[in-house]
Image (tube, rainbow, N blue to C red):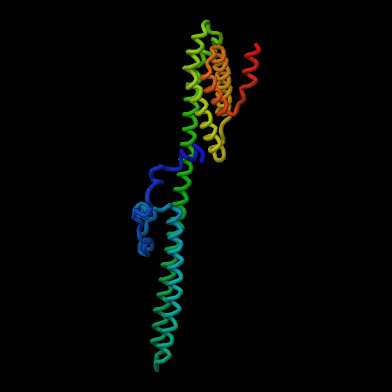
Amino acid sequence: MTAFDDMFSGDSEDDELDFNSLPFPKPIPKRAFVSPDFNPDEFLSTSHRHQTLRDIQSELRLRAQSLKNELVELVNRDYEDFVGLGGSLKGGEEKIDRVIKELESFIKDARGLSDRAWSNLKVMDEKMEEKRRLKDERDLFRGFLFLLQHIEEMEMLLESRNLHILDPKPTFVSTVVSSNMRSTSRLRHSASKYLLIQQIVAGLSHNLPISQFQLSRLSTLRCNLSAQLKMSIQDAILGNEGDIILQLLKVYRMLDENPTSTIKKFINS
């Protein structure tokens, strides 16, 4: 799992909950969504459950299909019973006609109820799809804001070293060592932030094209980071600071860079 996934996958505390302790609700009753004044928004608002929207949608589909099957079975069974009862009575034609009319009226009402249920389910589908779309857009733009924030923070980190780069030949070795010690942790932090930025870009690029301006900023950040690493490791070699050199080599490894050629050129010069 990437840092981008961690950032938007939800609160970690919720993931550690004991699901056996959750108050799972009973299945949705029929009367909850077939009333004449059914309101999808109110239904979603009052039926907050420990389930995803997709789970609720699946349960409603099953409920609608079950209702349809029950209606078909009821009509078939009662129709046969009523016809058989009327046929066994002498002069029962009028009763049969009346029963048939009542049954036809019942079938019409049942079909109307089924149609209304399916219509409500369609509206529910549209509402839930809209909620999912808005959630995806919210997460996408939140990720973009995170990207801009980390780019600005890294630019500030590297900017604080510009004065050091502009003066690459300090007068005293002690000044070089002191400056290198202060900058090592900052460079390590900058490298970590750069890797995080790369992960965010990878997560966003599938759904949100990154502008050429932002890509140019990232390229500049990488160049500045490499330049400051080069300057810092040269200062560490000059000051014979073995611990600092090891820390800087770890930063190179984080960035998947090989400093060998840089070190050789500096030593040979």
